[in-house]
Length: 517
Ligand code: AHR
Image (cartoon, helix red, strand yellow):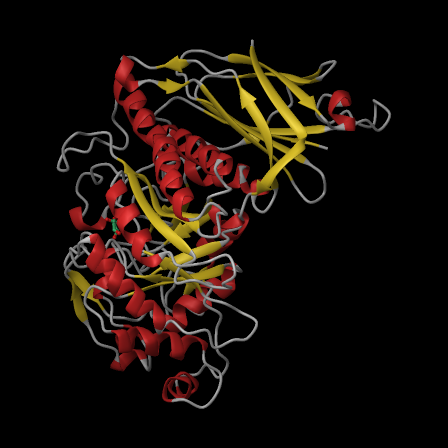
């Protein structure tokens, strides 16, 4: 029996919905085919955005979408992607797969996609190969309402009203594909570029994201903060609102042998989860450095690229980064999102890489067909954590794995209370063999001690009710175009009332969400 302690009356902080954010790059079939098929496509679409994918994404309540890259961002010249489509430049996407980029998806299309999704916008600017003027004009084009060359141009291109840019990234991976810069050089460039990311709306501030470290490059974090974090307590706004962090879970030891997405043994399963669990250390250590500069936690750690990265599916373009998605990925997502929830005092945004058809995608498409991956199901099960209040909780966990260096905790959890007072408990069992009985003690909640079996609230005279759902399967279980619902979340009713809370058994390799009313 594993004890889960929930202090429902000890609210820690809000879990910003942006932690459940996504990333879409001009890479492989993410934008083209995955999200955008064009108005003339036989695939059902609204203004070019495929309807099946948009509907599936709305179900998981995508809060924010980062675009246009990634490495592509520091090669992207936004003026190539506006105006009549027939006049837009055609070029080779040299970074990703050497295919033709016809720029038919540009600024207007991005905002249209976000409108359809009902999500916030996160535009990533070009520092590596772009100019300050180019970046400044892009911000003017997107957000200025008065008379100006860029606002006039936008109107001429069919959009009179300005848009809202919620987040603006000043460069991407500038320690690598974004210009191979040293931290002090980038930091000074950042200060200069961000100056011209102007706020044209009185009532709306663009949150500026500074390029943060690659994985565990703590020196980058410290050096960049030394130069860029200037906010004094009195100041309304400093130079930055967030620092990004990129970390991918790659099971293989070599970049050209990352491991297969679908064919792996138990050892590789635990190794993958062990590597995903490294996120805990990264968030803690980068967070500790941020605390030195910013003890009041005014800026956020934005994990704007995370997820699994395997070898591409056999026979696909190596530059397209197309990979399948299994229960192993679902467990990586559940583990990682629990980590983000628990550190949501500092982690204010995270963007899984990438939304469709690339890396740990929530959606895969094949022509007109579409499937929801096991990762999609985890995002759906966790969606109630968005903008809910994190409450204090802990679970008795034990290390598991096949080798000591590949250990992971058997159980991870996070708990929040939403604005209707509903308690959301998400638990992941990473073990491949063991089911665990969980004794959940809920303190500080009048109805916590009277929770009853799911669906029987009325019988128990209006006591609190629990509804549950579970995602479970063998480690390599996946959805395919032939069997699109082989892995899916189903109702989980087997929750018993106890004197102090709830008791349930979580099967091996499973994720559970319980909503306690
Ligand atoms: O997500 C794929 C790539 O990974 C991104 O373009 C880049 O930022 C990172 O290295």
